[in-house]
Length: 87
Image 1: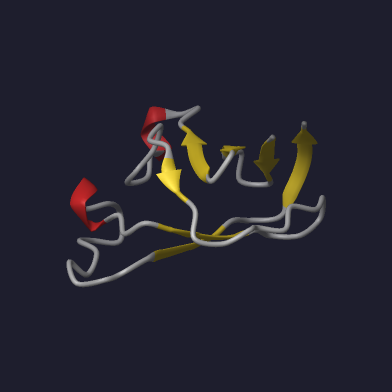
Image 2: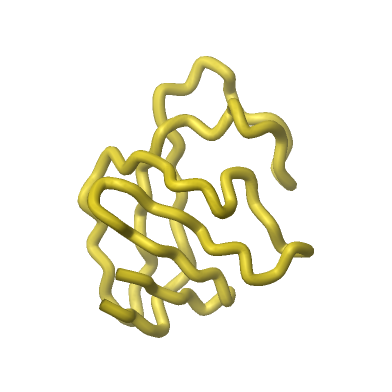
């Protein structure tokens, strides 16, 4: 399944992984285009944000918020509201 958010980000969930498809290199985030292990079963509905709990992203280096905690067990990413879903 793929879904797109109001910010223009596109995510792909396959089996127990999620991948943020980087559609604009200038708006990249740490972990883009990498299939990350999901630690939750996210609820994806049009009009609502999605909470993604993944493996820690600290090993992928800093992003626009700085360097992630190297001792973190998970990363929580809350998307903007979903605008479309593709099975």
